[in-house]
Image (cartoon, rainbow, N blue to C red; front, side, top):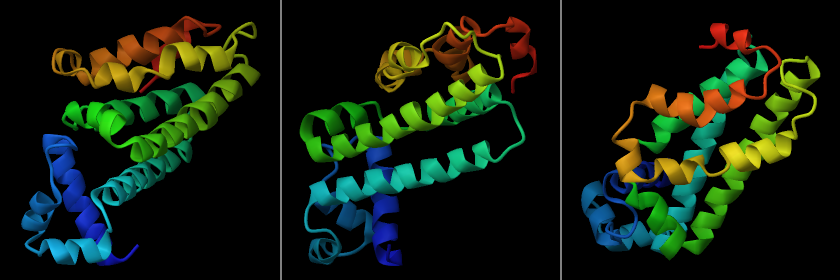
Length: 196
């Protein structure tokens, strides 16, 4: 990615976080960057393409952070908790309209978002859950795929609700959305006494 494109994407992301996707126009982005709209269009042919590239950039950064967590000398359950703590902090830093508008008005970008989310849940998190199950930290009778679908897949939609994410602390959300559900499937609940 060229540095000019990256600069545009970072500024666009900042605006989307504050105001959502729909209310930010290409004029707003050009103005925030102190460039002409024509210059902006030489880098990105349309707002839809800019949104898609912004989503790709966001998840590239997320995957870098997740990789750093995965490299730590921690148990699989500890890594899951750290990944979700990071994810919840990221989710609540956006205007809740961002997620709704992405889904409603920018289908292609939303498909990218869903694809990346699936990678995180059904590759990374599911892989860590399987690892924990193999070392007998998680009960053998638990269907981990089903666990992910029921307890983890819709967390982003819950967090996108402005009434929800402003009412509770990050730790409360992490506890109720992730940790307490994990506690229900572990062999020994005392495993959670050492979690970060």
